[in-house]
Image (tube, rainbow, N blue to C red; front, side):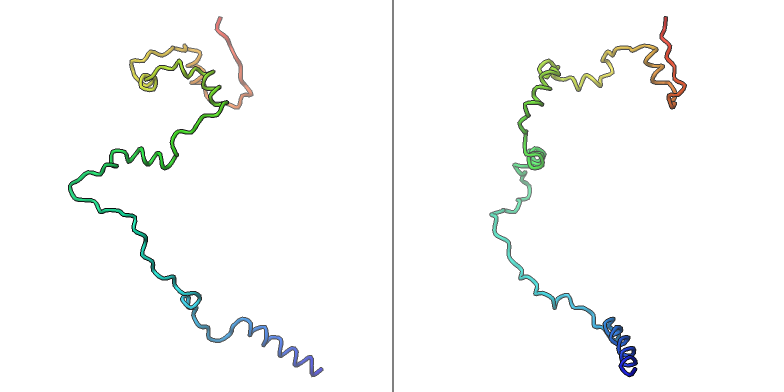
Length: 134
């Protein structure tokens, strides 16, 4: 009986002792490890810019950035080359992207049927029907 009373009094004291009841010191982050010493970077033989002069690389800055990001043109795979050949890569007009958005470019009029399909209201397709002109 005496051991049971001692045990019931001692158990909460041990449990609360692990919680750190009492004053806690604040942690010192510098006590964990030493700071690394400051190191002077190596000399890359860089010269400061001179006022009033233009850098030679300023003209090619965009090309250098693209080269750094993408690494230049990559070789095409055999599959990609065959697809491009089948699509007619060698028959494309040189300035096609400029003429495609030109207002003077003639486009094929698809007619009233295409306009009706584009202007048709959205639906769930349950009541859909198709009529062909006679």
